[in-house]
Amino acid sequence: MRLFHVSEESDIQVFQPRLPTRTDLDLTKGLVWAIDEKCLPNFLTPRNCPRVCYHVGANTTEIDKRTYLSSTSCSHVVVIENKWLVRMKNTTLFLYEFDINQFTLQDEIAGYYVSETTQTPIAKFEVIDLFQELFTRNIELRIVDNLWDIYDDIQKTTFHWSMCRMHFAQPRK
Image (cartoon, rainbow, N blue to C red; front, side):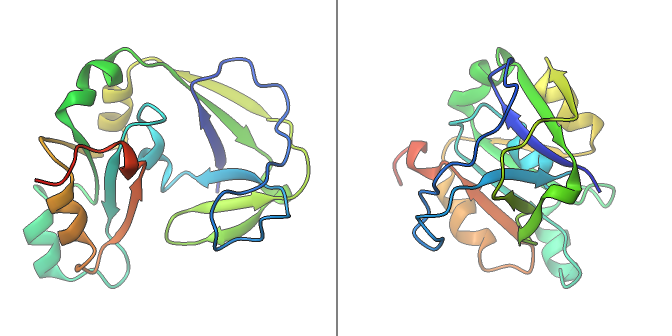
C-alpha cells in the first residue's frame, strides 16, 4: 500500500498536523491527511474542483455496474463539471508520498489515513497532465453540465462513493 497527499503546491517540505474542519472529528486534534493509492484518482483534479467519484466495492451489484460504468474494464469513475475542463488542463499537481507506518486508517471506503504527528514526505511526484494520469490509471472521466443528478443517484447505489468540494458546484437545476 502507498499513501499520498495531493497538492498544487510544489515545495512542501514538512506537513504539520492541522485541526480538522469536519464536525464529525475531534476539532481539537490536529491531523496530517493522506489518501491511499486506490482512492488517489478522486484527488487528481484541481483542489477546488467539485466532483463525484465512485468505484466498485466488494458488494457492488452487476446491475449497478451495467448502469453506471461505460465498460467492464473500468471500475472507477470521476465526474466533473465542464466548466473545470480548462482549469484541469492547466493544473499541475504534486503527489507527496508518506511512510505508511506513521498513519492510521480513518475511512476505508474513502481511502483516508491520518497521522497526529509532523510528517516529512519520502518522495514527491509531479503530475503535469491530469487527464493522462487518470487515463493511465484506467479511470473513467465524465464531464457533465451539472453534478447534482449523479450526486443524488450514486448515493442510492452499491458503489463506494465520494463527493468532494460540492460547495463549488453549479447550483441545482
